[in-house]
Amino acid sequence: MILGAFMITIFAMIDSFREPKLPDSRLGLSLDAGEFLRQTANSYKDLIACMTPVFFLCEIMSSHVKISRRFITGAVMPKASEIERAVKLMQTAGVVRAGEFASRGIHPMTLTRLLEQGVVERDGRGLYRLAGAEVSENYSLIQAAKRVPKGVICLLSALRFHNLTTQKTIEVWMAIERGTRRPVVDAPPLRIHYFSGEAFTAGVEEHDVEGVTLRVYNPAKTVADCFKFRYKIGIDVALEALRDTLKELKATVDEIWHYAGICRVARVIYPYLEALD
Image (cartoon, rainbow, N blue to C red; front, top):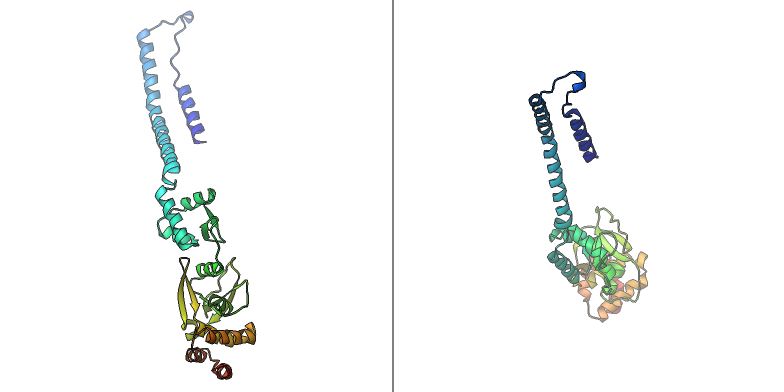
């Protein structure tokens, strides 16, 4: 569009600066060669003076095109060092959020190129991992920890993590602090519970699993939570957790009693502790 406008301007200028016509001797006009040459020289001199800005603008456009081509083919192309760092990050962390790439100076174009080449695959919204990587039994917990970094794995998911139940669940049970906005997650499916005060902060353990930090309630706190939410998970599940925790020596009676007080289920759990002690 712009180039076409320039060409129209050039043709208009050329047309307005036509060379002088030779006098027609048949009309009885005398030919003054010196005057004719002066007129011709002045006409082309004016034409060149008017065309100079046009040539200058064309040169600017040409330079801009070269710069743009250099930017597209050079500056945005992923560097080998960025590709290596991106792959190494995913090898170490397993699942990586898009923001983690940016915080390490890895350009979004690098991630796009790796996706196009099939080196990396998208694992839900905003999560990435190496294509073909093995998925462990704790993979859904890793996804949940990446999605909700301030949440804590609780109840049935915590029991599964500590090998204290035979119950299976496709959902990840997670506690978040009361007053926190409910997370919107496409995968994995979450069962969100709101805890407040010490019931939320007490008994949190951090485990490094495949390079990802999982926040999980310890066995004693999990048992107390199970009795608190016994109407949602079932009293039989809570009793199984209590029995297996004491049998596997993963918590003492005193530890369970401590967290039962925090969760306000001391009266509920007391007869069962007495029967198993």
